[in-house]
Length: 331
Image 1 (cartoon, rainbow, N blue to C red):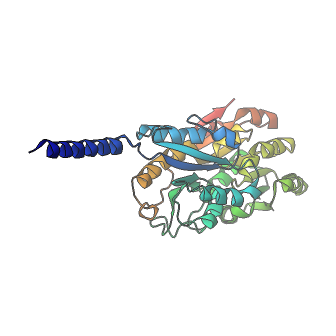
Image 2 (tube, rainbow, N blue to C red):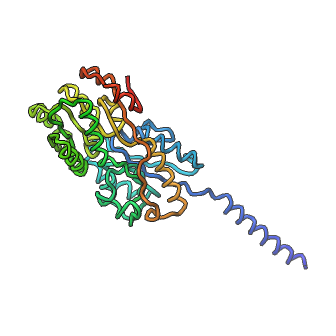
Image 3 (cartoon, rainbow, N blue to C red):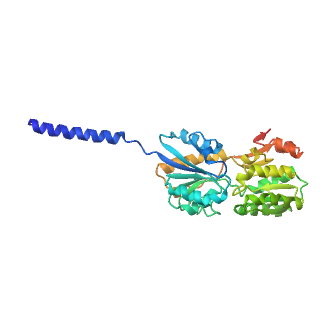
């Protein structure tokens, strides 16, 4: 081989080596995960260690699966800030941002259903996924939604039984809900009909109507309250708890955050566990599994939480038969 040919071959091999090194040095894709929560503010959701417990649980679970924040993924968080009127616009905004997957719960889900049929959406707790039209069935979503149900609608039977066990003298139980809680109301109404209990439906369509609902409950002489959480009510948990105490209404709520916000008692799925399990759905989707191939899962952990400070404020003694079943006692 003459010197010129050797030079050409050497330059070619050298250029190939440069190209191979260039490809090898290209960073792997950093996934963008949209996260939507009903309450809180967006600043509470930012970064690898956000202030919101359920989101923290989700990110820790991703870490266990091998994902490092900033290296493998970042989050694009949005908060409802207790303003349901923002949901449709914010859902459309995060879709325009073209994130790789969205994790959301409760009241965000119908807005996301309207906003996208392309971006995978992992439900971190939907009250009634099939009934709400989010999925075709729990076994086969038939679209871009998958994740977990929180079975909250069906649990209203158990919640009603618990509040009646606590306040057996209550002749009338008020049921506070918004339009998204229709299925929960139907479950509670059926349970009450079987037992011969009387219910008072208090439907509100905006946070401004909540105080009026309590006035209606007091006027009707309700002796207890069932709060069907979700929609516009979940972000208002603290205010509802304060009004329940002010009106001397023993109340039961859907999930632990409401009890931690001052509610007397809650019974529902463990939300931290649901968000942890949502991470496994995100992992599979990022690795190429289609949402329609991932059946919707149901919760495996439920918790009864009792707030003893609120019980004292209401002048209620919690029976031992209920206390021994509590998973968490506050105060």
